[in-house]
Image (cartoon, rainbow, N blue to C red; front, side, top):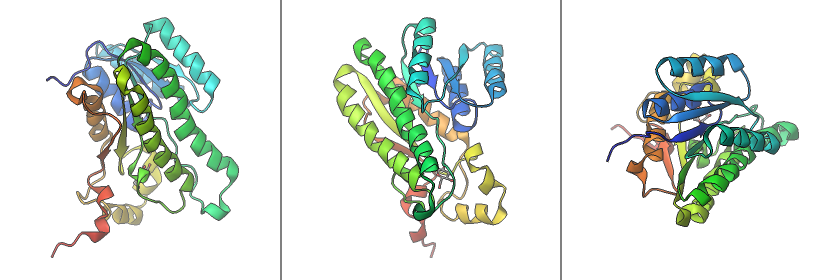
Amino acid sequence: MDIELKGKRALVTGANSGVGRAIVRAYIRAGAQVAINYVAHPGAARNLVEELTREGGQGFAYRADVSDPEAVSTMFAGIDDVWGGLDILVNCAGIDGPRELAWEARISEWRRVIETNLFGAFYCAQEALRRMVPAGSGVVINLTSVHEQLPWSGYSAYTASKAGLGMLTKTLAQEAGRHGVRVLALAPGAIQSPINRSVLEDKEGLAQLLTRIPTERLGDPEDVAGMAVVLASDAARYITGTTVYVDGGMSLFPGFTHWD
Ligand code: BGC
């Protein structure tokens, strides 16, 4: 079975940087057409469209804040105008929010994280399923995190949003399975991407982070993108409602690793 996405129409949210951008590039290489959703840095979105068009790929950029349900509906209507349907949705837009202990956390920041990571993914999944279910096929991939299962002090909104998204994935998979639609979670560990900028610039923080990864390296965005291709392809046609971890073993409680 070939791992390819020839002729598939894919929407990737949060797609003009980091893991989202790597997924766009990988999807184009696999033969898909890609709608690149972004909310900030329009120049980066434009550059990405130019890059993939130069290489013979097809795609367009669409600005929409996924935490705004009206903006999401308008984006999907816009995609209908261009493609008349959608085969793959990748919910990649996400933020980690400020590091604040729960009893000091600002409600406005807490809400912003949940509204982007959980509500945003739900709004997009809902619109996608409204198209995929009647069509009898489609794949939704939700980017969660190792923090779908690992607690992370200072990031209660982030961990709650990712655990919630993991369970949302299972429930949507159950609802959509009989209609030929698969719903999956893809959970990265620590990846060399903008969301990790501060730790990448902090030598000590980085050394400490590496002790939590059995393979002793951070992931590349391409490590996650490769699995996003596999999961959207027919090679994964019997996989739904589960989380695939791309984390170098980070979720294996590496504190329990003993070398001797
Ligand atoms: C976060 C990263 C973090 C990683 C491992 C990811 O979900 O976005 O900032 O390094 O989890 O803790």
